[in-house]
Image (cartoon, rainbow over all chains, first blue to last red; front, side, top):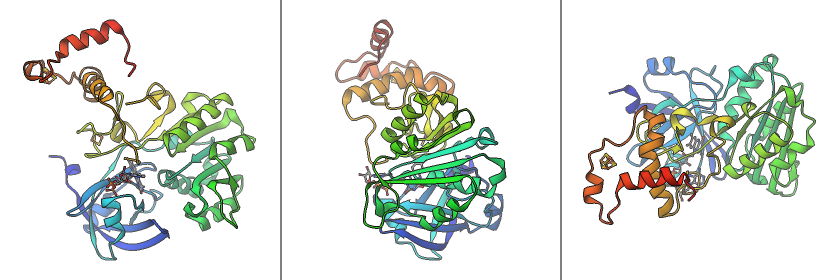
Length: 277
Length: 65
Ligand SMILES: Cc1cc2nc3c(=O)[nH]c(=O)nc-3n(C[C@H](O)[C@H](O)[C@H](O)COP(=O)(O)OP(=O)(O)OC[C@H]3O[C@@H](n4cnc5c(N)ncnc54)[C@H](O)[C@@H]3O)c2cc1C
Ligand code: SF4
Ligand code: FES
C-alpha cells in the first residue's frame, strides 16, 4: 500500500487567529525526515486529519521555499474545521499529501499575472502570491483582485499592504458588504477587471473562488480577448482519498484531486457550471 | 463541499451513475468502469437495464438533465 494512504503525524507549532472564524495552523512533521523530504508546489493541498473526527482537504499556503514548516489557513464551517480550530500548540494532526496539480508556475514565467479571488477562495492563491513576490524579477506586472463577501472577511491585511509597495504590483479590493473604514470598493470582484489597463497579450490569469464568480470572471476575460489556455482556476469538490482512487471529487472525466485542483479553462470548458457534473 | 451539493436531484445522480461507469471512468482510470457482470440488471428493484439505457443515450445523443 502506498504511503500516501497513511496519515503522518504533524505537530502544531503556532496558531494565528486571522478573523473571527478563520485561523492558521503552522505545523511540522513529527518525523524530521518526513519534514525534510516534504516538497510541494503552489496550489497543492493536504488531507488534514483531526484524529477521531475526520479528514478534510486544505490548501498549503506557503512558498515552497519554506522547508521547516507548512501552514494551513482554515475557515470554520463544520465538524472537522471547527475541531481543528480548538487545537493547541503541541497537539497532533494527521497529514496525507501533498496532493494534486498546482498552479502553472512554468507557464507564468515572464508573463503578467492577474489573480482574481472571491468569496472564501483566497487560500489556494496565497501560496502563488508569496511565490511571485519572492521571485519578483521572473514575472511581469502583477494585478491582484480580491473580493470578499463582507469587509470583515479580508484577512492578511498587512501582507496586502506590503505587496502593494512592490514595483508594478496592484491590489484592488471589493466587498459585497462594505463597512466604515473599508478602503476597497463595494461590489463584485469581477467588476474590478474593467478598471485595469491590462496587457492582454502578456497575461496569464489565475482564478479562485466560488464557481459562479469564476465563470463571470472567465466570461469577462474572454470578452477582452484572453485566450482559453491563459485562464487557470482552482476547483473545490468533496474529497475523500485525495489521490484519484475514490471518485468523490469528479467533474465529468476529471478527478479534481488528481488532475486538478488547478485546471486550465480549455480542459474544463464543457463542464464548468454544467448542472450535475 | 464548498457549501453546496453537486448533484441535487435523482436525474443527475442517475446520469452520473451511467456516464461515469461507461465514459468518465475511461479517462480517469484508463478502462471502462463496468465489468459486464450483469448483477445490476438482475437485481435492480425498478428494472433498469444498463445496456438498454446506454443504448438510449447513444441514440438520443444528449445528456441534458
Ligand atoms: C482542494 C481543496 C482545498 C481546500 N483548501 C481549503 C483551505 O485552504 N482552507 C479551508 O478553510 N478550506 C479549504 N477547503 C474546503 C474544506 O475542505 C472544507 O471546508 C472542509 O471539508 C469542511 O469540513 P468540515 O468537517 O469542517 O465541515 P462539514 O461538517 O463537512 O460541513 C459542514 C457544513 O459546512 C458546509 N461547508 C463545507 N465546506 C464548506 C466551505 N468550504 N465553505 C462553506 N461551507 C462549507 C457544508 O455544506 C455543511 O453544510 C478546500 C477544499 C478542497 C477540495
Ligand atoms: S453490469 Fe455489473 S459491473 Fe456493470 S454496472 Fe452492472 S453491476 Fe456494475
Ligand atoms: S478525492 Fe478520491 S478521487 Fe478525488
